[in-house]
Length: 176
Image (tube, rainbow, N blue to C red; front, side):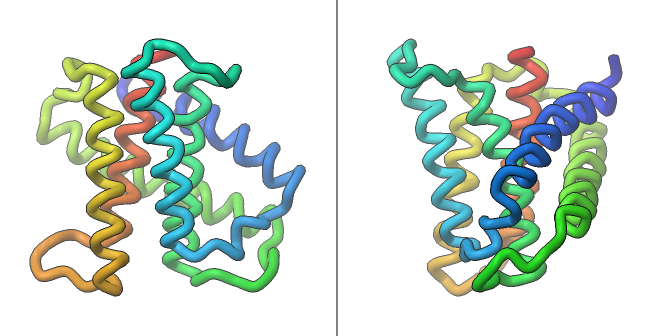
């Protein structure tokens, strides 16, 4: 399989979970401010790091569901950045899935461009490095959020969410 095919397979797995939860809960996450989405991603990445360091999970879910959660919450974060948060579930399932697909495609296109330039270096990385890079991106995002979105030279919150998606997808590809 090509990297693009592997990426699409991983995103399809994430989208399938996202769609099922959307069916169960609606877009209840629309009430979340971007900062809360970032914190939710932090919880998932921190749990992955904890499992990696301890070598065991006490809750009967491993690392893979957390990587899926990071992808899905980062896409939610991008949606929230675009739309702003809402006081209620104000989007249809179709509208949400259209936005999901839009941001998944943008993440794929970014990954393909970077993958070209970096010559698939991610394939030689250890899975723990993806975790650390996601956590670093979360800390950067929190700093930007604390600064009300203003940066002097750095990319914005959206760029960090896209990188989190792509590192999590690399983790999914490496752990299938």
